[in-house]
Image (cartoon, rainbow over all chains, first blue to last red; front, side, top):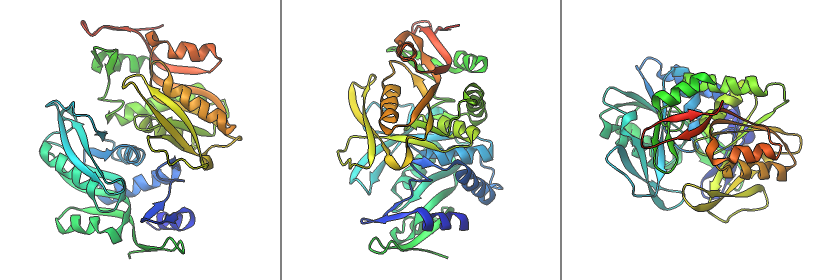
Length: 192
Length: 192
């Protein structure tokens, strides 16, 4: 998505530790008209797949998830992160390792909100090593629902989470794939 | 908002400890068409106030915040909850006590995303004792921006956070104010 790549080049900031800061439009301040166009692009890419549910993970997936669900005219469900162990039998749960923070947390989705008839598009703002997406995919598989695909706004291609998922047959579509970035120069290059 | 009250009566579940569970449409599974109508109602209520920014708090405020910002055609900013102390001078911060969890956390907003020219509508899914809203209001005041009002989907009137804010002159508009609820019967009554 050329508009997204241009916005990353114009507004993104690169920091040490593979951090690409795009909080001016994606995950702190939300540029609504722009993010609507992102939602429409995911609809264009996945509209023929019979999707009836969008799944994301709190917190920074919720804004884009909302705008994607609006295009598909279907509900959004967001998985909750939890450190508590009060997990009754009424939720699907999965473990996610945080690459950034070096911690592990549980994600949960109520069993009332996912079932075997669901055809799910998973969306998220970022994809790096793929831990969050893998956790969401396991959770959907546990529910008996079908993962139709994953829509990612920005993939860090050099961390290869997306490549591994595609090798496993998951239909991962990222609107911008960063191939390299350099915090000393601020340069960002994209995969074709 | 009659449609909201009916939805609370139809789908809400009351649990011990003043818990009203409406996660089927508001804060786990998001009923997008319904929440769009909620967003439109906030626009109707505040449209003449010169609002140029919507502010909410992660995670469950983000979906409604997104849909309200869409109506106002302005950006959404969401405050982040943090327990880390890596707060440089580039954020506004405020402390919030969690009534539910008995803990205190910091909320932060980047200084780049709030300034004295902003006229801010704060939105959230729930208002009980008002700790989150009070924290957000302090943060906006610190930035020099103006809090035009607060839009709340469901206020628990019997916990009086909304009343206290109104006494302080804050324009709090809640689309449903629960006056009482009873977990033994499941009954919910609304303030007129």
